[in-house]
Length: 227
Image 1 (cartoon, rainbow, N blue to C red):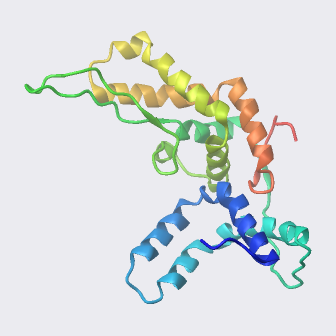
Image 2 (tube, rainbow, N blue to C red):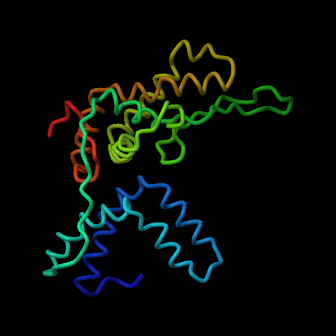
Image 3 (cartoon, rainbow, N blue to C red):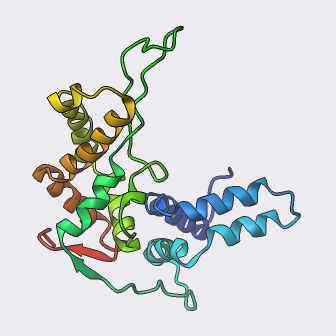
């Protein structure tokens, strides 16, 4: 890629870089863009732009571009302003199930030996991921809470550290040790690891700090988080 060489290019490039942490929360745009890239259409570049440049994808760019233009000594008299989102206040109990859903143990797998019997110790792993998560187990998805929880989960180191520790702790539970098959082990982990992380007061404080970092991007404020 050619390095930005003009003030306008520098501002736009920086806006994209600064918005990258927000754009990861929009998997639909990424999937549509990848599908457009795989197409054989002569208008593939237009299709990629259309896939990416939805209103919600553009909004973080617009919020960042104006001050970056000013920093380069530029103004844009007719640039469209970023949409003003309506912010609502939610409780921690409303947000925490979404955070717990993003701390998602993978299916437990016990290797099979030549005779079909267990041939080794069960394997345990976990994802904090856009696609591999427990959101489908929630009764309904609130998009504002999903978006806030995903940004917070991805960008809060304390949550990642606590998730690793919580998995180890649950693996030592007598109730878990007594289970006799991988499906039961998987269910046990998924019912306990994420909620354990979301209930940790240190994680809560760190999540509040991350949400404050993204205050201009998320449309919820958590009651009890410092402004």
